[in-house]
Length: 110
Length: 120
Image (cartoon, rainbow over all chains, first blue to last red; front, top):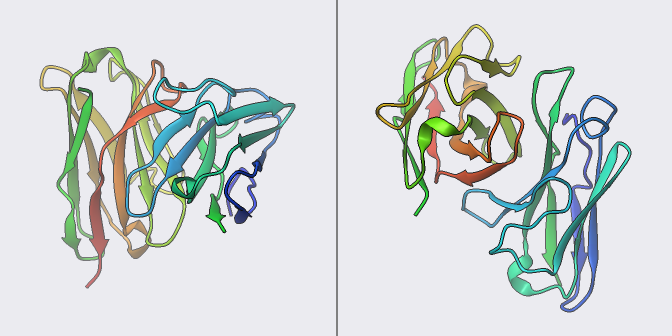
């Protein structure tokens, strides 16, 4: 069981907007910034969002992140078929003194 | 180009040992913290160990404490994971990842992974 809670699955049709939630606690999301990773099938994860809402230059602005209290969310607008992947949230946990990940959300583009 | 290349994975018997390496290129290795993350077959990402830029500070998940040791050689641009007393639940793809700065900063570059299989 993961320290951070994500829905196991999400779906949307091309062009739609989808959000993925990530719930934690005071010692992790409540105290530190949140990062999001995208993992396409059979490949290594890549950084999608860092410091709650910052995008690496190569990431399209269709992807956005937010954080409030001990929860965070990833939004994907203008959904495309190539967005079909697993998405993970992650943050540092001050109590565990280490990284914690969400269980991952499998996004399906219908 | 910033790149990380893991090696050293393979098949090992329960109770055995293995040493993973991660060779970095394209950035000043000694200026960034590094982390190992693993992914069991069909499962999610699990943090294993992290090390500060100098190597002075290390952090380990409870599941590997006392069995795994993370280290680095900044003169060789290499990160290591020494794994002892391996168990079946250590079977996974092991990724090394570079932090954007300190240990608790986002992991912005990942290697392609190396597979460790623990089985008799």
